[in-house]
Every structure is written in structure tokens, then in C-alpha cells.
Image (cartoon, helix red, strand yellow):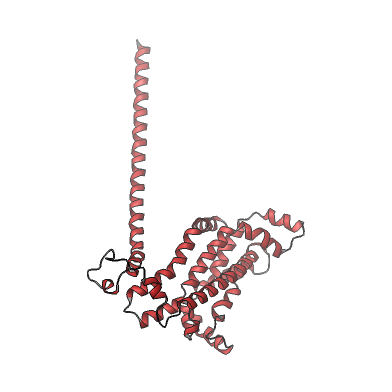
Length: 306
């Protein structure tokens, strides 16, 4: 009888323990689900808030001029006016096609220069051994703490002396000399994670440093390279400060300056202004969605490599 009682007691104890474990797991799962629900709710709310300006720009671009100024404003246009886009694009006195082509030329040229020179500098800091390497790398990073306004007047005087004002040279040529400290840092961190055995094998086979950089490091660093390319494209495509300072003639305007000119002259035509702004935003949206996977991967891998 004592053995049977002991067995029953152990069975009840085991069942109680199993129930406690199951209850603990259920509580833990409930807490995790609650946290995820709150997190997703916050993210969705944040996404809606950040999407509001984009939505407002889109719906205003297809409204009539009278409806664009209605109060309280309408959340959906009474009549969709897609004709606003060609009307705005071909508005009298505006040269949006010319400005767009010039902006594309500047953006592509700067992006090529940034990728070429920043990756070479990053390779040098990551793999080459030379006196003062760490000092120069720290000095390069320290340059990011220098506001652009500090160097504006000296650069303007230099570009004036060499006759570069009202040309694209001040916007393009500096990108071919280093490519920017942040870009160098991102690529250098990624290069540091590439196994040294690959480089050693290439050196044994007789490859030079330029060949190693081009044939090994660049193909293996596509995520980081695309990340730098996206940042550069976004910065140059939306740049207003640089063209405003160095470009004066209307024929040489970029798209950002052209939209600002349109706003100053025809600011009352809100629907046209929103239509042109939408057209300027589309390339950035398309680029981000096309390269989103590589962009996120490049940021993550750059952060974990040392």
C-alpha cells in the first residue's frame, strides 16, 4: 500500500509540475504576444504618421486649385485630375525636363565618383599598413563634425578664383576626392570583415592591390556598396543647398532649384507644385524598394564587422 501511495503521490506531483510548466509557458507566450502586439501597433501608428505628408502630397496633386484651398480640407479629391501632371511639367516658363536631365547627370556622376574613391580609401584604411594609419582614419571621421557652413565661404572663394561658379564642377569634382568620411567608414567596416586569406591567395597569385580591390573586395561588398549608392543618390538628388550657393543661371538649375523657382513664381498653383514634387519623389521611392534588401543587409553587416 505504501508503494502504491508513493506512486500516486509522485504522479500527482509530476502532473502538478507539468501543469505549472505549461501555465508558465502560457504566461510567457502571452507576455511575448502582448509585447509584439504593442510593438506592431506602435510601428503601424508611426508608419501612418510618416505616410501622412506623402498621402497629402499625392491627393493634392490630383485636386483642382479651388479644392486644394478648401477648409476643412477634403481627404479624397472630388474629381481626380491626372491632367495636373502634364500641365505642371509643361508649365509656361519652366524647364522641368532640362532640370531633370541635369539633376540626373550630376547625381550619376557624383555617385560614380563617391563609390570609386571612397571604396579605394576604405580599402587602404582596412588592409594597407602605413605610418599614421589610425591617426588619419580618426582625422577623417573627425571631419564629419565640421559643419558645412564653416567651410562655405573658403570653398566659395576658391571656386570663384578658379572660375567654377555657375558650373557643375563644385557639385561633382569634390566627390572624386575621397567620397566622404561616412562612406569611407561604412565601406572600411565592411572590408574589415572580409577574410584575409582571400587577399593573401591573390597576392601569391601575383595580383596587385588595385586588382584585389576591384576583383575581390568590390564584388564581395555589394550590400555595403549599394548602401553608399542609395545614400549618395538621395543626398544629391534632393540637394538644394549646394546648387543654391554655386549655381546662378536658370538654365543650369537642378530640379530642386526649379521646384523652388516654381513655388516662388506660381505658389498659388498648389496642385501643380504637389504634382511636380510627386514626380521628384518617385525615383527615390522606386530606388528604395528595389534595393531595400541590400540596403538593410549592408547596414546590418557594416555594424557587426570590426
